[in-house]
Image (cartoon, rainbow, N blue to C red; front, side, top):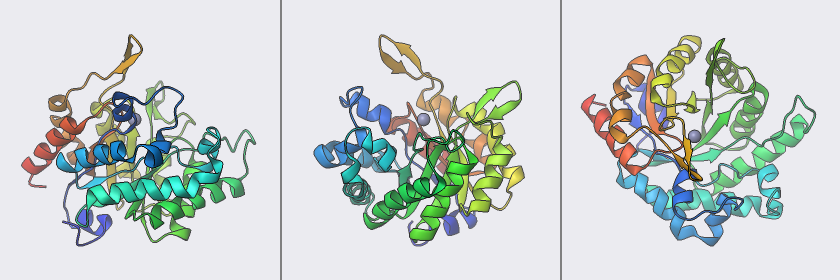
Length: 297
Ligand SMILES: [Zn+2]
């Protein structure tokens, strides 16, 4: 499979499968509330490798890495500000080990949690933090960087630029939308069209939506992003629906069959890569794999 980059492969018309949830998988493996998931890259690397391998075995063409909260701003919260490079390099290396030479590693980069508009951080500080993380992920063997769960155009653009200017990795950028009175918007009020335009302008190779409220809503979001940036391939990482908290545990309503049943509609809407976000499991990815194979993808 992996003779080329992801971009070239999807541009040739191939539909690819991405992986599923990491955070909710770690919770099942015993991650405690308040514990730093990314520290598991160093202290419980066998568990992290097991998550990565599960998705490869389920048929994913690409896997993420345990580095969603791997910026300095997030790791400092746990007193791990001096271990940013070590943690991220290890995260990418573990996924590389699971992916082998024939599958892609799309290493995860999440939001910093700092608001530019509120003056909590400067653009230079954000850029430096994303550069530090992206560089370490590339060093650990990432093929692509997956900047995800973004809500602000400014933070996304800075992360994309930091990734493009400091690594040779392909750059993916996904945003999280909720349906409100004005349609789909990110937490910062960005529409799918505006998000798509901002990400492409900053240099993203691949864009899309992630997280959110189930795969059904992804269909319209993909259409809106595609219409705003027709040549740019789209990746979808859909939640298994909106979680309900049952006795302190998040329960996700969409089973693998329900998600797989919407794969064709998501692809018809314009997506080239389909995977899962919160609440999805290797069983979901296996079902999505079968659905994509049935498309002849
Ligand atoms: Zn999610």
